[in-house]
Every structure is written in C-alpha cells, then in structure tokens.
Image (cartoon, rainbow, N blue to C red; front, side, top):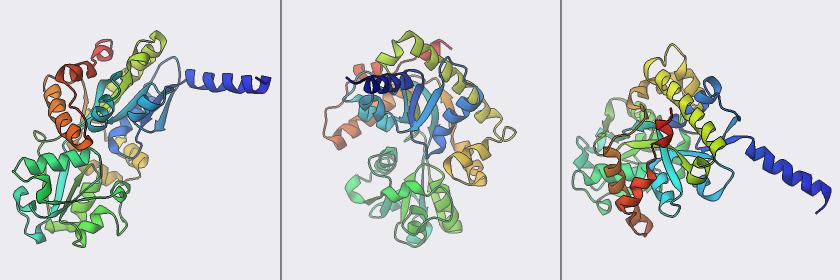
Length: 316
C-alpha cells in the first residue's frame, strides 16, 4: 500500500474513533434534546457528532455509537439485529389525528370509509392503525394516503401537496403524525378542525439506542454515560424551565418551525428517561403488528426484554 493511502486510512479510522457518533433524524422536535445537551451539558472525553440518520445506522454502519428514533424503527431493526439496545427514552408523545368536521366527522368512528393521511412505514402508520382499530375500524375499512411530502411541512405556509393543505382543500378527510404538522393542519381548518388523541392507545416512544459492542467498550461506554447524563439535565430544562431558557426558540430554529407553534404543542411532549413495566407490553403488541406488515416472525417477549437495557441509566 502506498504511504499516502496508509495515512488516509489511519486518518479515516482516527476521525471516527475520536468522536461519539450519533445518528438521529434532525427534522422533528423529539430529536432536539440531543443537540441542546451537546451544546450545554455534555462533558465526555470525546466530542459528540450528531448526524442525520437513525437506529438503522447502528445496524449498517459500525462507526455509529448511538442512534435515536421512535420505537417503531427500533423494533424493525431489532428484529434482525439483536445486538441493538434501547438505553434511554428521550420523549413520549401521544400523536394526534386532525380531521375535517365539514366531512361529517364528530367522533373517531366517523373516519370509517374516509381518506386518512400518514407518513409511510413509520410510527405514524402504527398510530393511525391503533386509533382506528380501537373503535373497530380495520385497515381495509378506510383509505390510507401515505406520502413522503408529509414530512417536510413543519412551518406555514405549506406546499399544496403537503398534508395541512390537502386536508384544508378537501383532498384528505384526516391525517395523523407528529408535530408540528398536525397543529398546522388544525390551524388551517380553524373552527372546522377536530382532533383525536389517546396516549393509552398509542404514544410515540422516541428513544436512544446503542449496541452491545459500544456498551462493552469501557471508554466508549463512559462517553455514552456522560451523554445520557447531559440528556438528563436537558430534559429537566425542557420539562420545567423551557420558556426562561428560550427552549422554544432553540427547538424552532433546529426544526425550521415557528416558536409560537412549538410552544402550542409543547405540553404534548413528555420528556422521559427511565421507563416502567408497561413499556414491554406496549412493545410486544406493536411488534405483532409490525411483524405482520413486514412479513416476518414476531420477536419473542423474552428477546424484547433483552432489547431494553437500563444499565446506562443505573450508572447516572
């Protein structure tokens, strides 16, 4: 190998070893505690690097140490990569369905036979399924409109092809997903909007994930502990002192939203950390649905119990 190629290889390896690499979707409110923690509280031995991605990167790219996503993507990845661990809950959010009362919708059951928007192959799809099945409406009894355009409208004005405008112009009867998109849909409809939400039926569990390899590396593990410790401090600020610390402005800038809209939906976000015994039951039920959708075997409960790893939290 030529000397220049050797130096390039060494540089490439060192560049990744010297950083705590975190893959996270950078478009949603739920991810923002990570960047806030890095800017304000992280005190580890190596600098963290927050990059666009998610838990799937832990399965496909060994240079990543942490990933963040909703539980839906975590379960999908864990089905084929049993070395992934859920180590911390960043946020829990009961999504909302926003519907158009002009379409004769006054209760959830009225969405039977209607056209409902969601973001494909995501927690939003699971949410819509759970909400509708809770009132006896099966997937085939409503039209599910799924579009990637849905993800890009976090701030008005939205494009004609995006969910808030599709709802307002009558192309859709309802849609359900994360904020701030639902709030924008409700704002567009004004008095014609009705929303449905039930945390006992569905809540997004936006979590931090790692791998057994990273967790078993003593130096890497210490940095992971320090990052989670910084998240703990961040979630205290997000929960108890967001306004005085200008968190709404910080989050709005990070996700290209309006601070007033972020503040309007803030109370729907429970900034988490540790989980209780109810989480495993929730994951078991969701995995059954995902396994059917993905045409795979259900992950046994005993395996899902291994997926949940409290050891980092216990070191705080």
